[in-house]
Length: 286
Image (cartoon, rainbow, N blue to C red):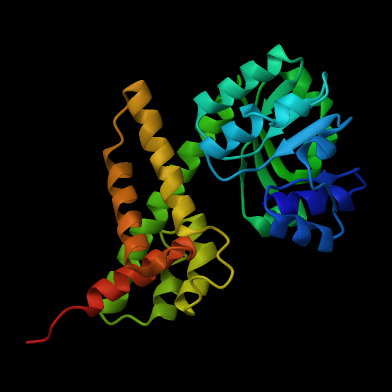
């Protein structure tokens, strides 16, 4: 996601420099024409805006708050745009520490995939002070096909978690239902044709199932199985913190975990269809 956003910003004429702890990621970015730094301090020197897109809350917290992290090297007066899918409390913790150093933070998770990031067609969910967001309008507009303000810092992350809970639930149920339909003898292409126009359809079903029907569960893997499990777990934990029950999400998480444990780690989340179809194939005939 970060690579796609960096390319999008550079293409629009922004002065972009990238950093990743992974040398391989830095090499790929350089091959895409992105200027990269081998040290974080060099990447942040005199930068007015800092964007971070990271895999999970512990890595994000360490990147911003850890020894030698972003806040130690960022220039006073800079604006931070945190794009990751993480929990609201981690976002608020980072924003509070940044404020003490004179750095303004914007809570800005995104919905979309790497192709959307590359094209500047992400759904951008922003939380924070309106004046801070307005100061980086040109950057946000470059990345987004649509933008939505949610309120204070942390509310953007909450909306993204809710969105991803719904997305993963849709995909798990769609996979279970589709496997049932094909096991009952319906042609997969015909089943997709009808369901994609019927009441049970969803954005993710229409977007992902054509590849799954063709047997492509992992070649491109725009959203890996383990990321889906992580996002649902974030929703369950948020519910625990505010005493809001999430029993259906807990079941969805367990099903994704089963999917990962049966050979789908690293595959796209729509490999849940393959998981269910293989469950059915274990039936014994009389």
